[in-house]
Length: 174
Image (cartoon, rainbow, N blue to C red; front, side, top):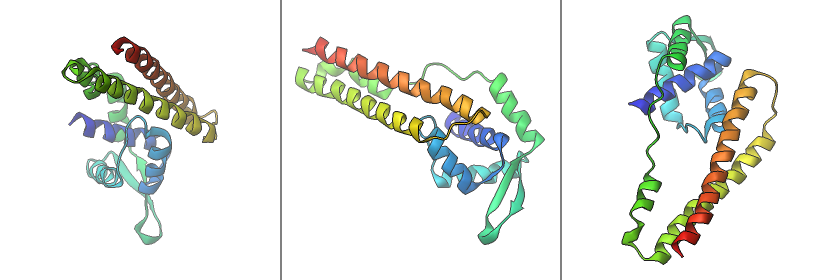
């Protein structure tokens, strides 16, 4: 339920920045939010339908082949502000990967090292992907660029921390 709620707010947030079609939003999700909140096309289009029914967005223009451009309504802005300001984001995220680390005593030290090393490897790959993404974005001085960079930087630092931890942890198991 929470995941679904946050997709709703991600869509509202993007439409608060500028109107867009489902396709535009999907592109923006892939560019800016893939590391934060991945969404499939069907999830996104489903959410647009629900938001329109709820009166939080409306169709601004219709184009060829049924393309609809959506705009956030005042009700949608109110919901977005409420979520940003009043709603507790919740406790620490659960980590299935770390839960496994806790029980690695049940496998051989070599297997434990392999598992931890693979965590470090995926963190390193994510770091590289984020570096590439950062270089490919045409940053401006708009809100999307400002706050998008903050999120991207968090991803880079978090990935670096995970990689450094994994390198250290492998040595602890040896």
